[in-house]
Image 1 (tube, rainbow, N blue to C red):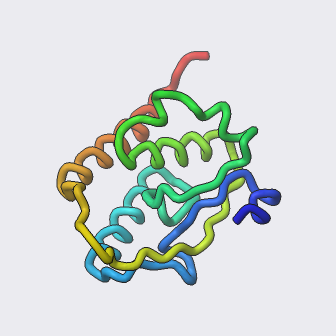
Image 2 (cartoon, one colour; image 1 turned 90 degrees about the vertical axis):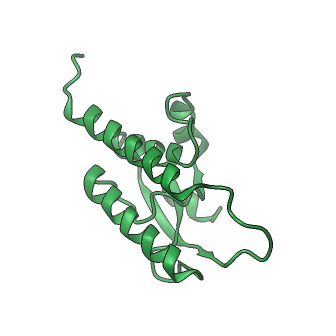
Image 3 (cartoon, rainbow, N blue to C red; image 1 turned 60 degrees about the horizontal axis):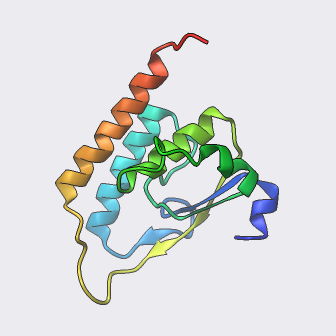
Amino acid sequence: MYRLIRKTDIIVGSRYVKGGGMENRWRNLLSLLYNRLIRFILKLPVYDNLSGFFMFKKSKLKPLLRPDIFCGYGDYFIRLLFEAKKRKLLIREIPVFYPNRLHGSSKSRFLGILVQYSRTVMSLLRSNLIKHPD
């Protein structure tokens, strides 16, 4: 991953490129469909907008270290990718694979996260549609 960052601005670990995936088929399907919806609505250039597994060139990340981007749970990653797209940063995806948990269970509430992420997506869509005066 470190060698690849020299040729791009951002590297995103993706479950939805060749070689990536998830062991849990049901979660994989739900996540894949939701990621496709996010990609379609926001016109994002990546297939996995929720992985949160990424590497930035430091010079490209510094201007994005803002509290309006890095807030929330995993929805920060949607805002980060959206802002990177607006700045025309070069993004490359590499495969990651999520195995099933060996111990414990997720503390995340699926419906609550879905609502939170959907609000973020709609907020970004609105902000992109509204023309801001310079």
